[in-house]
Image 1 (cartoon, each protein chain N blue to C red):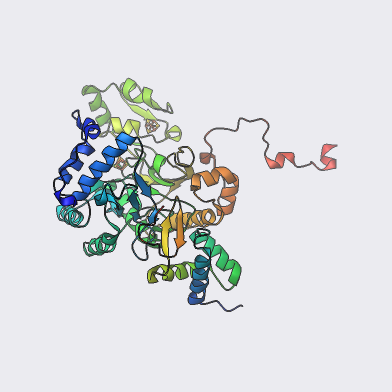
Image 2 (cartoon, chains in turn yellow, red; image 1 turned 135 degrees about the vertical axis):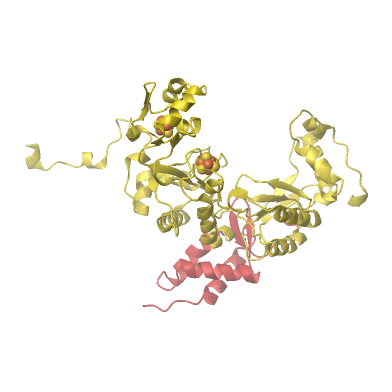
Length: 403
Length: 83
Ligand code: SF4
Ligand code: SF4
């Protein structure tokens, strides 16, 4: 049986161990010393490289009792040849906000997974969860039970709200314009039902970045991107700006000329910013961290619609609310998200992300349905098609007005 | 105002729908909710009630969620039967 088996020979996979960079093959081989499942995985992967075809079947079971998310069912289509990986389900575990762990917590997960699964993990998946790779169906419920005893819960998968994630925010970063960790924890608890029980046309990802640096890439990867920003002037410490010139920074070339909105000026003595033109790209603040700080009134921009290319092409999120104060209990944000989810759940097509839905129905109709007024910040650039008219321009003028 | 239908009645009606559709059509949670609201009338059957009914079906194990490119509600599958 599997335990007696030697690690299979893998000439194709061995190629992926070359070079100085990390290699998933090397890691699977390490795990294979102890885990029959990892040995089976090497075998089936080598076979896939030889056959030039994946040997996995996806779908089917997706959770433990009561949950519709958190487990991604995966079966080998060569179960007789590779019985150790006949089932190779993935479990998604809801990560702590900002990915802070104690070593004890990590050890408890690793120990549990060596007993109940392949021992292979992926910290972290693109949604942010802890990914436990490879287990059998009969291990799902016991694994879930042990995870909950250790204080963890499953994350989202399928057509549900995926596990919200965020940058480290104020825990370690002075640029955070709101408490990303608190918001993420709050949203995770608020949407427990929606995370565990799929009720939407497709997945819905929430990512919270503390500032426009967007370290969680929410603008590219989240259906709801919450990106910290500020109002009011960037705070400038002129003495610290001058000190940068002495330390080799060419303020004109490195900062002013690279400002995307060209709203900065430097006369060799003082840095001035026309803040009304600032697009809050963070460039100047990132270069002169000691001299510049975001403005005093802080909150977040709420953007909607990003997705990776799956059914249709990739999209970036676009602005829905240019500035929102984000303080507990985050009522305004939850009200807005609630309206969007209700509309999309009702009218969205199967496997249509909310960004695609907005494109299909039109932003104007979407805004009207969720009760929002259009705003200039929602428009990327002015209308340029002369054959499209605003409705009011088409209305007939009264006869006397024409006379 | 019309008297609200019970969670049990909605859950039972959902279960029957899932059972009748087994092997013929995969139903999404929203399909069930829309069908229930239509069947019982929006005055008597709210979306929240449907949510609770679905939850009971799942917690009791009478139905399970499955995933085939999207999430569906089905009768518990036979082991290893995933496509
Ligand atoms: S997104 Fe901004 S606040 Fe968050 S970690 Fe990155 S720089 Fe800091
Ligand atoms: S944040 Fe960006 S746009 Fe604003 S002043 Fe600095 S460089 Fe210019």
